[in-house]
Length: 180
Image (cartoon, rainbow, N blue to C red; front, side, top):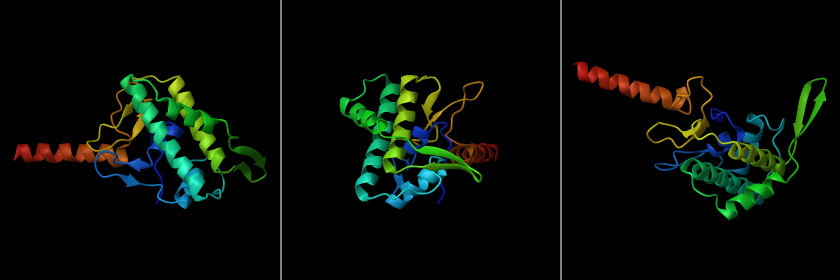
C-alpha cells in the first residue's frame, strides 16, 4: 500500500491516514511498520525508523490530536488543553536531521523526530490557519482535511483520484439516467 499526500500539509496528510472516520474507518497505520513506511513516503526520512509499540501509540495519539485541533479551529471552538499539551510536547523533540551526501540528501531520525516534524507542521498550520483555505473534503463519506491552494479557492475534494472522480462519475451517471 502506498500513502496519499494530497492535503497540501504534512500534518494534514498524517491526519488523513485514518480514512472515512464517520462511516467505515480505514486505518492506514495499522502497525508500527506502516508508520515507519509513512515516514519515508512522506519524505521525512530516507530509511524507515525502528518503532516500538509505545512510540507507535504516541504517533497515533498525535495524529488524532492534530485532527481534533484542526476541526476545532474550523468550527471556531477552543483548543482542548490536553491536546495542546500533547502537540507542544511532541514539537519539542529533535526533528529529522538532513545531511547532503554525494548520492543526495540523507534524512535521519527516530519516531520522536517524525512526531516532532508533524507537530511543528500542525502548530504552524494552526497558528496561521485561514479557515477559508483549510477544509474537509466534499466527498460524501471522506473526512480528509486539506489546504486549498487553488487560485480561485474553490477546491472541493481532497484529491481527484479518489474523491473527485467518484463524485464526478456519480454525477455523470445521474445525468445519463435522467436523460433516458
